[in-house]
Image 1: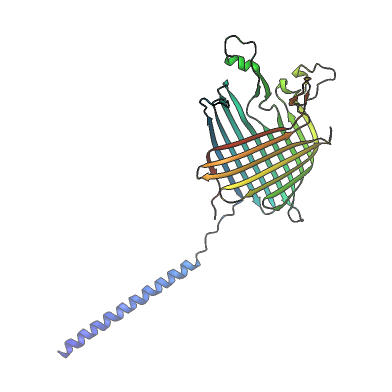
Image 2: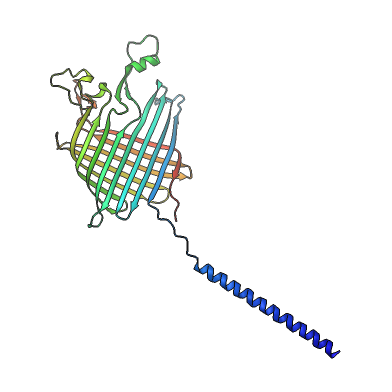
Length: 345
């Protein structure tokens, strides 16, 4: 009996020893695995040099009147806008790009035709390289402005047959005011950019080439194009040159305030002085935009555009003389808005 107990005890001791060896082996393997895992280098995140975003919107407005004593007309309007940015930054180099596209039309019961009320193509690009002076960069800039298609000023038809003027009568009474590349403005300049705050940028280009293009001969006199030769008939559009070159200085100041994720305001004023002709007369472009996002896909937008150019004859005096004047445009819109922006870290 004693031998049996001794045999059982020997077997148990041998089994325990084998299990202890297996446990030690497993622990050693686990420790080796942990050590190997610690030696694996962390994934290196690739640097991000581009920041791309855009605000895209479609706005609709409608007015209906029934027995409205104050007067007015039923009307409908539809407009679309894109405000896209693509900005690059690496070391001391920056490259900013912005494209603004606007187009819209309306229908009013007093005129049986579609009328354009919003149309703009505006592209800006600026390259910069930091100077030893804080917040100051060497810069080269390019700006381009025009619109998509023709814009008209509608007069009241006269001499029509019947009780109401026809669609053709309204079309015959309109006057062409502008069109694609009529006019178009191109600026290419070199200078300095000062950016003391994230919300403020001021650029000054003392050497700026300015090109004004008026493709349509009917509009060349309106936009101050020069005659091909002295003494030619000014009533013939083809007697004027299709473009005008200028060399001058350009000052651009931009401010953008982002109050929170739903409300922002940005403004831009551009002044250009032509060294070659009347340098004391500045061409002025001043744009403002207030953006208020009410919900995920709905927003209010208030935009204004002011232009003054002493070469553009937009106002007709009582004696029939055409003269320059301040141009102003304002939009207040509500509609569907979709924002594309980089994800926050």
